[in-house]
Amino acid sequence: MSAAQPAPPRSVIARKAYWTRLLPLLAALACVTRVPSFARPLWNPDEGFLAVQARMLAHGGQLYETVVDRKPPLVPWLYQAAFALGGSGSLTPVRILAVLAQLLTAVLLASLARRRWGDTAGRTAGGLYLLVSVGLNPEDAQAATFEVFMLPCTAAAMWCADRRRWGAAGAAAACALLTKQTGGAVLVPVLWLAYRHGAPRGGVLRLVAGVTLPVLGAALVTDPAGFVFWTVTGSGAYASFTGSELHALVRALTNTVILAVACAGLIPPVVRALRLARTGAVDLWLWLASSAPAVLLGFHFFGHYYLQLIPPLALLATAALQILPRQRLTAAVLTSACCCVLFLAWGLLAPRPELTHAQRLASAVAHRTALTDRVLVWGIHPETYWLSERTPASRYLTAGLLTNFSGGRGGPEVGEKYAVQGTWPVFREEMTTHAPALVVDDSRGKPYAPERVPGLRRLLAARYEPVGEVDGAVLYARVARDQGD
Image (cartoon, rainbow, N blue to C red; front, side, top):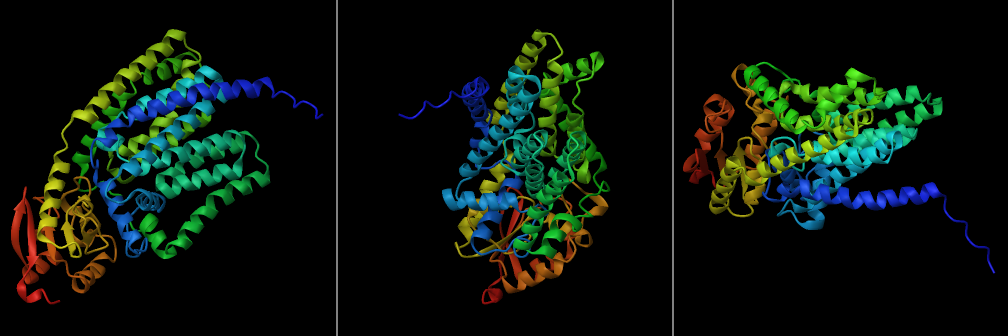
């Protein structure tokens, strides 16, 4: 008769019981806070861009060659994988992955907080993060785009560094970097933790290897020169304040105020704690401070940039609440919950006129073309390709890549000479080799309208004629003599 197995330590039993109770609650909260994301076919042009990229990759496209964007490769690959499993006609598979990404972020933050400040802090950090995670314009907070999938990677990097798992911390930081460039900011607090914990030389080497090897691998799997150009060196004109100063400042102020409202339950305890005592969370302050450039980068101040601030804010608020009276915790949670309800209502009830326009335009495109026809949509709404199920005639899915227009940038910084370097020769070749059956001018008076872009104006004048209009967007079909090309 074999000896009886020893009972697991009491700490193991307590840990298992803790997570058995907390995980279902966080999962339910993650699902509730993402309900609006399933209420629309898509939320913003980034989702449309990624959906079109995924279809192009599935049909043999090569990232950074025939499928291009200024972003790293992980999210396009994620969309491609989701479409392979669930079909490309809906973003539901990607939306489910976004729920899981938010849940994973909350769990990692809860684990970090519990390790430092106890069981209650773990529940507080996970819950506060999910409640505040929807605290932006719904098109920024509910979209399944880069920041949502970057945040669990940054949280994982901090989680691993807190446990002195340096190689894993580097790999998680690399995943954040390969999701969006600004994800690499998490290396600042990770390096601080390595210094504070006195990481041995071997640990530092593992950290460096964990960061560099995945990035080098991604470059080699795609196109090394194209990878470097599109993700690092080719966006100089985009990262400029000139030409959109007032618009950018208004957007910065607006999104800052919106996030401040969402964080109404977090900010007071942090401010009060700073007046009373130090929280002893230097790495968390570094995490927040290093995430700030993500908001500043490019001087566009898009709302989804602000998402990177929320995990360190949630942890800092949790740290502050540990030294404040119990009623402060209750007030913080209730305030955050009320704000969350307001943002969920906004997401469910607010009209989305640009989506309606894209749907009407896509319907017209589908009506005037065959499924095998190539189409050029000259605008900043690539979702028209996805909604109409038509193949783009160019690898440049928005006019922004060919004119530097983005997010309201106007004036002297928009035009052919401000395009991403080398794009116009390639674009002209594409228009000759795979001439689109239909060109859609969706500029609607924006600074990149054909009358201000000679290359496109000449193309339309020589080979196309207007055949219709949808909400101000003009449709051009190839003239009869060109149909044999």
